[in-house]
Length: 280
Image 1 (cartoon, rainbow, N blue to C red):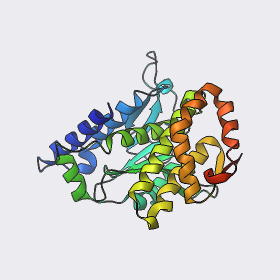
Image 2: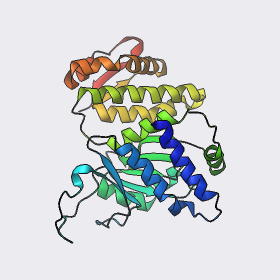
Image 3: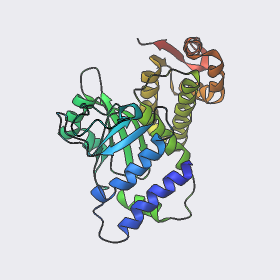
Image 4: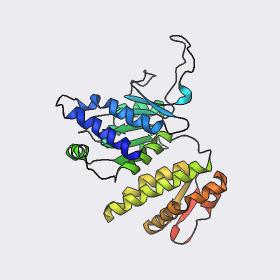
């Protein structure tokens, strides 16, 4: 499923681009919506991307991420549906030549954050979920990069024999992003998040040079700390050991229940695995 999802997304964008007439920033909305809805359909509750939702006090974002409980189940008549905000945040889209860091720092995203709490920022080749830190500033929560620049993206999109290196990791990133902010009620959900973060972290560590390793890890570690209400302490070697432990042992959490899993995390306080402590 993950391979087909990515293949369809890239092919749709490239086929439009190859016409020579596509203004990608807006013509790519359909491919992006299909991508997000394909992943959102697998979640419980389901998440659906709605393009250009109504202005609810912060302007009109390019998209809103709504959960299935927010959609009407009967005909209430025109104008009788209460105003509501997208429960999984807004989506801000720019062209391939833009940079997500600069988009995230813009006034537009700042307004959306103040209203919606979290924003998925993308230029189609790079995806960043941003939220607010304790001082109200913009902070990166999750990020996934398909290509470093526009040329690299079109090379990837046009290659019909591309490898599958992105497919599963990109699918997991989108799953975490669309589920961000939802309570972890089931132990299986906690186990999946632990394993997913561990896989992403280790992949980043193994693919970056030594000077970039801690930066590559920090985004994932911050997201994991927020999701589990814990804080990890330790050097790079300790963190890597802990991530490998989570990747291979996370299924044990589902046997303990969520509270048991959290308690089990608290025991990792010494040795090469570093340490965990509650933050709230």
